[in-house]
Image (tube, rainbow, N blue to C red):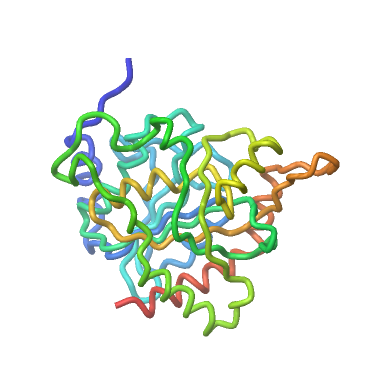
Amino acid sequence: MAEEYSHEKVIESYDYLKKIIKENPEVGIICGSGLSGLGEDVENKIIVKYGDIPNFMTSTVQGHKGQLVFGRLGGKKVMCMQGRFHPYEGHEAWKIAVPLRVMKLFGVEFVIITNAAGGLNRSFGVGDFMLIKDHISFPGLGGYNPLWGKNDDKFGPRFPAVTQAYDKNLRKLMYDTAVDLGIKDTMREGIYFNVAGPSYETIAELNLALKLGGDAIGMSTAQEVVAAAHCGLKVCACSLITNYCIIDYESTEAANHEEVLETGRARAAAMQKLVTEFLKRCP
């Protein structure tokens, strides 16, 4: 029988962390595959392993450290997830919302979400950054939604609107920051197409996603954004395009996770600099 969500489970996670963390974070950060270096840049850090936190899952994916890092980045007090939880790891959807709800209890005002994604848009190149302005979630449309089940009114309404989930002002600020850092040519904007994974998509599936309006495709983020929107957290999300999606049957190339991690390592410094400078400019 599936384990049921309860408000008390989130409170237990929060109470455990609150005994360790004396300064409430202002900003939440979720690191994607190969992008955990953001957590390494945090100053005065306090590290808490996921396995030590009541009701937290453990991260099972290579490139995800599986720990929270508290401290300061870009002058802001942050709570950084070095490793996230994915549908394909077997987690129930409500569990993916738990870290976002803990952030809310701490008083976090907005969340920066990063991910590694495949490039669908033919004008995108490997190593580009894509600011997410919206998403299409096939798992979400099929019922894998972190709000499924009894609604927790303490966090948000039964039927939350998500049309403004990706905050326009934060997105503009991050783009302007990229311009000032001289990386405008690698900054894109587009729609993130969310799939469940863990197998990479077929050529037919990639072509479908492209025709439906997807610019980049990946296996995370959408559930976190829905959970954030539900409890009133603003979101600024950015994909690192780690591979070029193969939509030609004549091609002999194939996507692989090592390629994703390698691009993440190659572009990690640029992502870290962008996020740090962005935080400095945030009100």
